[in-house]
Image 1 (spheres, rainbow, N blue to C red):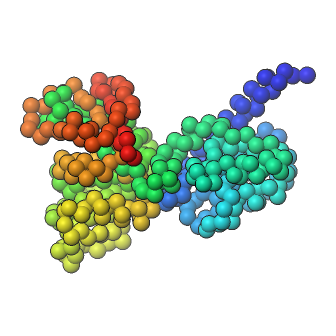
Image 2: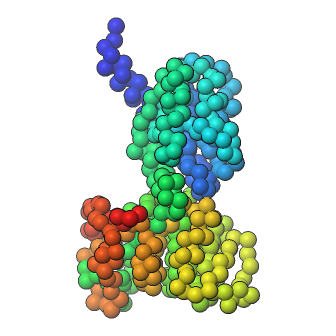
Image 3: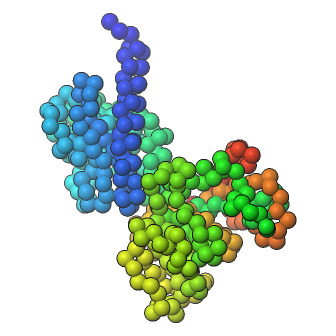
Length: 364
C-alpha cells in the first residue's frame, strides 16, 4: 500500500498540471468577457484530457458547461478542473453547479472560490453535501492573477484605476533633449507592459498621443492582447493621423467638450463622451467606464492628466518607476503631495537599473 503522503503528492502535481491548462485556456477570451471573469475548465479521465472549455463572454455558456457539452466521452468517473468556483445563481445563464451535480464526477478541483462574498463557497458546500470529493485552492494565486481586479469591481461596484508614472532621479517626468524615447530601462518597460495586460483600458491625454504617438499595447508581455484606449481630449486637439487612432480594430473611448459635438469624425471604433466642464471630467469618466463594462484602467499620462487625476483622488493605486537618469528639466512631479492623499507603500523591488514602488489607496 502506498503511503498517504505519496498519494497526496501525486494528486497535487497532477492537479496543478491540469489547473495550469485550465488557466491557459481561460486566457483565450482575454478582452472579450466584459464584467465577467476569465474562466477555464478541463475534464480529465484516465490521465487524459477528454474535454475543455472557457467562458467566451457575456451571454455565452460558462467554462464548465462548455467543457461538459463538448465531451464526446462519458463523464462518469472523470475529474473536472475549473479555475473559479462554479456559479450557483441565475443570471444570463443557469447555475453551473446544478449541471455539475447531475454528473458522477470522481473529483472536482477548483482554483479559487467565487470572489463575490455573497456567494463565495456556496457551490463548494452544496457539492460536498452531495458527497462529491471537492478540492479547492489549487494554484489559487495564479488563478487570481487571471482576474486581478475582479474582486474589487464586485465588492466596490466601481472600476479599479492604476496610475503609472516614471520619474528621473530629480523627480522629473521627462529629460529635455534626450533622443531616446525612454529614460527607464527595458526591465521597467516589461513590468509596465505586464501591468497594461491586467487592465481593460489604457488612459492617456491627447497631448501625449500627439507628441509621443504611442501604441499603448502589451507587446513586451503579450503581443495579441490590446486593451481599449481612453483619450482625454477636452479641447478637441487630438491628431487623428496617429497610429493608435488609425488602428480601427482597437476600441477607443474619447472624452471631449460638449461644444465640439458636431465637429467630430464618426467611426464605429470610436465612442465619444461629452463633458460640460473640466471639473466634471473624472466623475464622468468613472461613471461612464463602469457602464461600458470596463473593470480596470491604467493611466499613462501625461503631466496634466496626472495632476487632475491625483487632485480628484481617482486612482486606487500609484505605480512609480524611479530611474537613476538625471533630468535637469522643469516638469516636476510632486509625489509626496500625491501620497498624502491616503496612499501607503505596498511593494518595492528592483527593475534592472531602476526601482519600482507600488502605493495603494487606504480607502480603495
